[in-house]
Image (tube, rainbow, N blue to C red):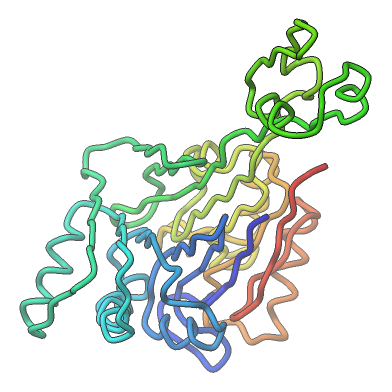
Length: 309
């Protein structure tokens, strides 16, 4: 299971209705943060997220509405006496940005901060962690911008209790070893193989985040088959030229990306402040006409994704 909490869902400047970009992902006990716009830590508190669970922060690009909340969050973690390592990912230059604020504001960090930069010339990177993979690819904005994906490793197949009973596998450690993929020898000398009692492996969760981008094949690649794609949807249908000039997408264009990637659910995000709440239904309806499994993000909205059977 994983849970997504939208902390800020607006574009460029905060409004009465939407804060600036930041999304939390709670995944197997870890808390990840995608972008950290101004006010992110206030939303963090409103959502009752625990600072001590935060382990990874992913920055898409260096526009202020995705970045200016980061120095404040890092210092607040210090004041909360957090001790867990924080892994901070983003474009080349991110370490320099953090170092500038540490020097200018004269603050240090007692917890370990590991900054991982994606080189400007890179066409994508990946990191294998315990149980999941982190992926990033450049997407299409006015400046260097990265899309992100978290892809869980395949899960073991279901254990067939009835088959184990028929084969005489006793309850206890032998069944556990079979579930882990190990063969076991029974007391009567027979060898039982995992495939005799364990079904085919099952797909893990897949989360994709593509913010501040025009439509691009790299967004499709990151989101292929994802449980959830969070995609830039700054403009409504008919404003494709504005979207292209500013390096953004319309809600309809985001829906086409979701359909091409065959995702389970699309969340429209990064909504322009030019739209009043009553106008947002137009964005959602235009997207759903292309990709029916679409929702529109709103501040502090929570979404939970269970494993498939």
